Image (tube, rainbow, N blue to C red; front, side):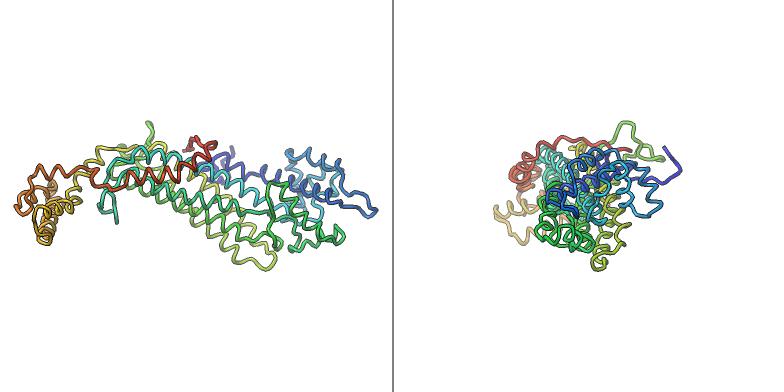
Length: 484
């Protein structure tokens, strides 16, 4: 390995081999060659003739092209690009060196964006398929977690202040629902992707119109045939030389949405780990701090948040590109696209692997959760206490004021004096409530205060998530290894 050149951390530390391959030179240039074959086959099938009326493209030429899809002569292309300063024409030349019989018909009628843009669409779709697969696996693991802890009461938080209780499983459905929404966006975006097709230099198909001797129908058919050969239903109906760069912006916005969900999830885990209620996995030999040996830092969740910040910012790049394109084509998109699109996908791939790793290994400390619950529950139970006292003949307004006063006193005991919460004792000592301390403590059953949280969890999973997982069971069962 060379250690004297910059290597992207996205490749070295974060992204999976599968996602790295999708954006690799091998994937890119073999797709170029498949597109050139699809173009040649289409032109042959549409009856393209030479000036003497003979078929311009033969089966022999196409077979020759197919025999060299994968053995790309990179060095020839690189040397040629040094001379002509054009990557597409350099690869046309290199392909032609391997396929001398077909050399004259490679890229016939096309412009550079025929291979460049069509390949970008194909690659983004493949990357979205992988993102979809990993999203489904995160959803699957979160589903298991939510069901396992659907009945475990826990103090909820609004403004990060103790609030009406929920359950650990119900809280997990909030993360689950956001990931589910992201999956909907991924599916929609996949359904919207179309090929550029064979649109020519300014999108008018002028070169193909000339090749087919003014045959409009042949030009129309060419787009559809190329799309079908490359696994798409259709091409964009109109374009300049390129597909509209809004496509890249829409795709990166979907990735940004996933990053937002993952960031919120990781924030909650980090806060829960601070409270010692839930922890991300921590390996036997893992070191939490170079100075403080006892520490168990939530490094995976912090990494999720860090990469998510990057993806959310990265989504701005294609938005700027889309908004500043000039007329039918300008090349100030190229360098940006080469960075923003692949790296957005590589980062989201790393995020989803981390999410899967975290969810799969979450540790729940039920006794800590219960202890925190019992510290706060007297405050949460005051409405029930007041209603019981009213039923026994008490004055609702007077009892409300007494509870407010006692709550402030008990809160001061906890915060200022460091004492235990004595709210129940204060209430029991007041004859207006007519309740003993034992009767009050009998009301302190956590499950009484979680509302429909267990049922909501089951309903959401059974009605929405379970059918989704059943439809996609063939892609479930992934495990995520993180590099470092």
